[in-house]
Image 1 (tube, rainbow, N blue to C red):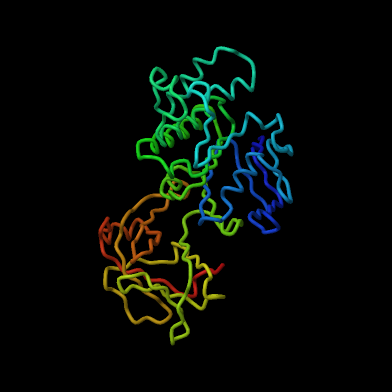
Image 2 (cartoon, one colour):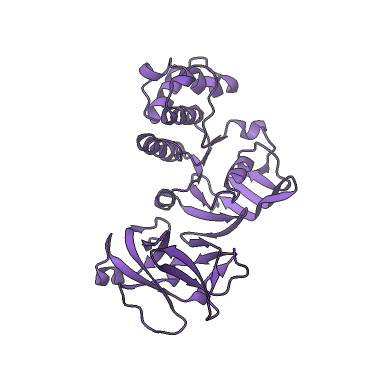
Length: 343
């Protein structure tokens, strides 16, 4: 039985700006026609990693294999197969039709681009009869982002890299951009790599979600990332005020501004006010805001708002039924402070 070759294999990758490290990935494989999500705080290296994967520039160290072969920036082997859509759309000073047809014109071949341009605009919900002759500066922000996506979809790329594609657009455009991206995967087998702060969307559609922190993958799946500063308490533990008199208690951090990772499976949901005096257990009160199933694992997760913080908790289906858990339900979360992982 033949095993499919990864469309990307990243090995010993490191990239620096002015000597400062921004990306460090030891090994990462991405399968053809898969959907991978990238999450992490601002400055975590998501955009830089996508640009490296788009072969826009060469990494400081290591290599990125595409279809098993090393590729350099703007190589013909990747030029029309990999395309990147950034958060801020760049359109050339010309009509919508010419913007979308530009990649086809550069690639060469057929000279009748009316049909592929029409199809690409239709995928993003834009009527060719209305938009084809519009100038680039006659578009709203959401329309401009959809035109930019159409200019990439028209090439039917093997890889579509999306960097916060819906962060600055209206709700209708956001939904159309999402649908068009997923359609590229279902119709052409396009591999999608999506960096987004919209974690719920990523967890709903991605085969795998990778967390980046300071340029380094720190895990996959759902997790809770809580930033310092941390306030020392008399009992040797530390807390973070969350507002409304709520505090999150943790073990001693390596430094006051350390980042805490809390595994959703390490947190239990109790009925509101059910906290006891059990030793080595911390409690925090909150309200359930969402219950969802993770596509990759099939596990159920509850989002719980505790003051200014949103925590994700893994819930057993049997306990979900027993607790009659639903949106707006007040709960108490219980966890061991020493189960926290620090970065």
